[in-house]
Image 1 (spheres, rainbow, N blue to C red):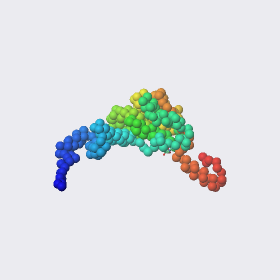
Image 2: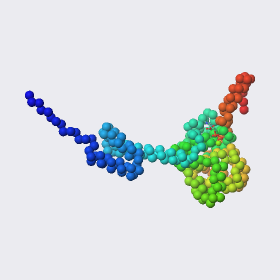
Image 3: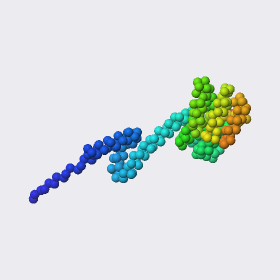
Image 4: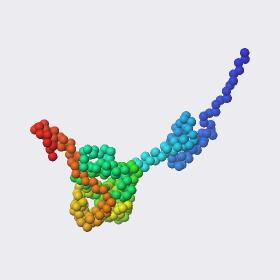
Length: 281
Ligand code: ADP
Ligand code: MG
């Protein structure tokens, strides 16, 4: 019996020289186009395409989806950096049971960011510790996450920055800066006495945004006291006129969240000492 040994022709190498060069060209196209995440993911996507027998369309989609999500993540990080959020507060971690005065349905509506499309302003009014800053920062975070340019500042910082800008001849640039973001949060109006020229700075910021872009303001003083805060009743009236024209006003009049633990501790102490279960306020 003659044994015939059939020597099989060697299978073609998975990547021939031509294929390797095509791969390098493709990778360099991606780099030239600054699609760095695509370039990095190219080998694994091509491997997956072979393994899963993906069509050309499916392979391209998978490759570009990587760049799209990386770009979106970068843009979000940029918007969050720009926003200068002062705390990790978010709408999700706001405890509505602790603040029954807050209209949950209204907050959910604001959380959709639709108010930004109509340049509606939001006024959060209430005593210290009730969650005004928390909600304002939560709204700013949500706006940034939804894709809007947002900036958070305090009334005192805004006034100081405008004052410096006036001294250094940068007034117009600074006004343009405060006109830019789709949402501007001005926190803590009324906590600190504002210097005389702050009223006109605030007024100008509010006027130039009027009916174009939204402002969220938090304050511990009712609108009737704004003349005192700004030291000028005429400017205060004109500013309120613009702010309130298209606005949502939330009055938070509950107990201080900051003092909750403090009250709880006091009550425990008092109960242990006297057996009195009346809340200590
Ligand atoms: P305000 O600006 O009204 O003085 P803050 O928003 O600064 O009060 O709230 C004080 C602290 O209590 C913050 O750390 C905030 O996150 C927290 N806080 C207030 N209200 C709530 C709430 N309802 N749920 C969760 N945290 C709250
Ligand atoms: Mg606050």
